[in-house]
Image (cartoon, rainbow, N blue to C red; front, top):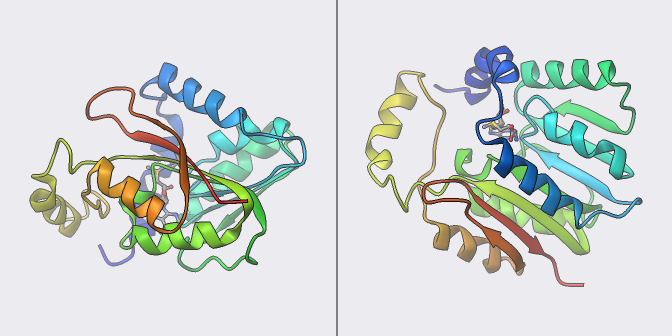
Length: 207
Ligand SMILES: C[S@@+](CC[C@H](N)C(=O)[O-])C[C@H]1O[C@@H](n2cnc3c(N)ncnc32)[C@H](O)[C@@H]1O
């Protein structure tokens, strides 16, 4: 599939209706994220999907800029935010690669279920580091298939060729941690709820 946003556009309505796979884990990730909030916090969410996490966090922060490459995901997110009368979140269609923001402009960047979907996660992590203010916080939840499903390196590209799945990059938890530390972040919190589950990391930029 040449244009990956088509995959996400196609499944957007279905994705919006799906219940959260593991509610307890999701709630814990929201709670850990909230521990880093301040009322004046300016957040950027990358790959926000249908906006459900941004909508949850909106009442507790100053503002959220939320972007996703899929225009259908963004349409749903805007619809849901309007329904709930949320006014401090702006949703816009953009890839992380195209997104242009001033350096040091956010207190927090979220990338949930995103880094393993990128061609170049190192470039994305470096960009996130640049976008954060000093002492800013980067929060990510990432599938690290290199630890449990190495074979995906072979079957993934076949599924992608037939348009059945998007690009999925295969790397280990340690490789992800090395990439995050490699641009200068310090790991503040690292949690994998269970073997094979996404790895949740809170990383801090130096002050
Ligand atoms: C698995 S969904 C996760 C959505 C949301 N973060 C969540 O946790 O429910 C991945 C999302 O990332 C978006 N995405 C994939 N690659 C992207 C990129 N390069 N730039 C921006 N968004 C991207 C997709 O459109 C999709 O909405």
